[in-house]
Amino acid sequence: MNTSYYTSQINRIISEVKKAVIGKDAVIIKVFLAMLCKGHILIEDIPGVGKTTLALAFSKALSLNHNRMQFTPDVLPSDVTGFSIFNKVKNTFEFRPGVAFCNLFLADEINRTSSKTQSALLELMEEKSITVDGVTHKLPDPYTVIATQNPIGCAGTHYLPESQLDRFMIKLSMGYPDPAGEVAILKSKYCANPLENVNPVADADTILKLREAVDSVYVDDKIYEYIVNLASATRNHPMIKLGISPRGTLALMQISKGIAVAMERDYVIPDDVVFICHDVFEHRIILNSKAKLSDKTASDIISEIIKSTPAPKILPNRR
Image 1 (cartoon, rainbow, N blue to C red):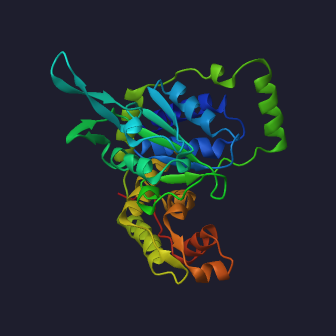
Image 2 (tube, one colour):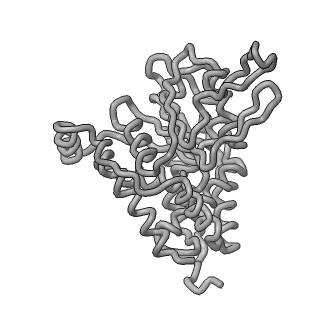
């Protein structure tokens, strides 16, 4: 595998997105890695820190067909999935696709809508298809959901069910920019919209080829065991009520392979797993009362698990 070619492609795309999203390089890289690994992304943060701009920048740099929906309490499941309507001329029902039929679906403020509407995303995120009136419709390939949510406690927010959280490969936070970054944002907004500076440098075929490269990355048996040991530690931890599911271990393995390609390697090392473990695991676990009494966060506990789980030694000549 020509790892240098694929790494240069990744860097070129990321460089374009950086033109619109300033000072958030790590977030940009992680979002793109999840896209390459067929995963969906949940971004939780306060309004106004660039979540929507990030998604739009990726859609432009990758020349992807994208749709955006603002999830408010009155949004219906059929608005997302589509619906059947009777055609009097043809005397038959015709399917009208919903907003989710695109390559990149931006679900804005997903936790402000009802649980019924949130559940409309479950099938499309897992099976990459939508079933309406007993007929299954395949979604375009590649397909990615980038969802944003306001922090719990903000007006009108609802908790996402565990089954839906588990379908997001990673959960990220943009955070406030540093002073220098915020000055750069002000300057970039002075003359024009920063998104106008983002140029299309790839397309859907590019993503599919990069995905093939990710799929071909070698994973040593010791890495498989390391990932399973990390997940098992969450299931047996005295402060965790709900541990990592097998879907979570699959997500960690897959995105670790994406990191290897980005780092110009065709094999996974333990550092790849550690780099992304917090983003894959934290939103999937539920803490119990012991953790709350001890003032422990999900991040604290995942850090402890990583520290206490021995990492294997992987040599460059692993084959």
